[in-house]
Amino acid sequence: MPVIEYQRIEGTLVPDVCVGALDTVRSVVLATRFDDLKDVRTVALDESSRTSAALVKIIFREFLGVEPRWVSSTPNLKQMLKGNDAALLIGDPAMTFQQQGSHIFDLAHLWRRYTGLGFVFAVWMVGATTTDPNTIDFGAACEEGLAKREEIIDFYQPLLGLAREELHTYLYENICFCINSELRAGLDLYFKLAYKHKLIRALKPWNM
Image 1 (cartoon, rainbow, N blue to C red):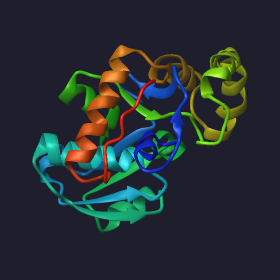
Image 2: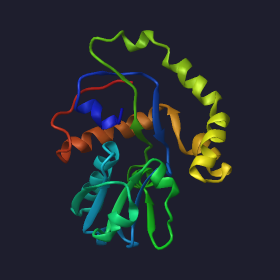
Image 3: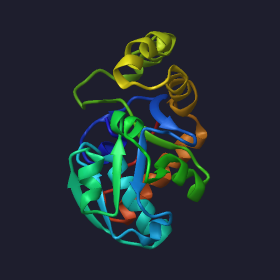
Image 4: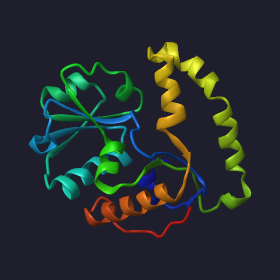
């Protein structure tokens, strides 16, 4: 689940596992023709984003002191920038688009710059009627997935058209799959700022 959804729906966080980044994430970026984000006046948001859309709003409001106009859009950079100053892209489109002519801001890196903390983008959750997550071995499932990273790279490399070294760096260095104290602190701050800037209606307690 996008981590922001924990604050919006009923459910319990699965402990210890996540999708996060301690610094550069590569798959969540803001592309713009400006080299200074304070000059941005309109931002097209990838309509598939939730956590990242809230994050980019927090960065502008809390750290840059700027409130652009927000526009929801399909993840097509050319169309997004046709009538906007900046575009938020996540996932494969963020890693594969042609970057020439654009200034690229990695959102996890920006978060790190302003807070000194890592960022959690996604988590696993179980519903209120589901078995206690502590009785399900999500850690083992995570370890099984991590052990298959080379197979995952073999499969996706021809589909994405990226160099194998890029995908290796992404899965082994950019992405974190186990939460630690720094990511917990980053998540706590993110939730508090999301509430401060009215991106969530209430601030639920949480524990991972």
